[in-house]
Image (cartoon, rainbow, N blue to C red):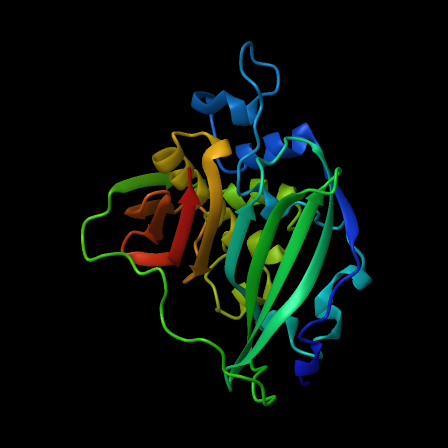
Length: 285
């Protein structure tokens, strides 16, 4: 098995995605949003206009593309079981509507050779029905045993480090033991998050199914939204972070936030003393 560094620059065919008001409600409920924020969990409350959570782009379009729309199609051969989500960023160019359509185009922008592993970075741009930029995403995956193909090593070192002071904000969310069973209904049905007989569990890699990293990311987004934007998704502009360690359903997530500049903050998410998201940056108005 070998990766193909010539795949960098590969562009997927544009494809259309669509989502409904119900999809927006489900995403919010899967992150335990409750009646204190009716704008995210109801569509017919008197005097309340429904809104979509700003991290929802990470679940939009599951299963709606084709092989040709995926720039990873040219990346070469690797063991998919060795792939983990490494980082995720979202930039919102306008508030995300609760329902609508968009055209998405993805591009493979970097492939780094870490000798014993590889890191692959992709970006996607979504435009609305009028052709205006809606959101952009950037994500990376880490693939064990896929290095040594002769590519660039890539950047190293931590970014978005918090100051050595107490956080300006801190919010804790309790996840349910069944959290992944609900979150998977957004589209990611990987049995690693639901099947106690999954090979990774049977082999002792994990003691039980793990929570989706993007579920942890969504809870983190909720903490940022509440602390920095007074719960208003229209003020939320950008989020990025690196997945540092897995989370198990039923664990409590604590989001720690440090203001660093007007409209900008850094953050980390913890389970107890264990860091699960780091190198976090958020921009807001």
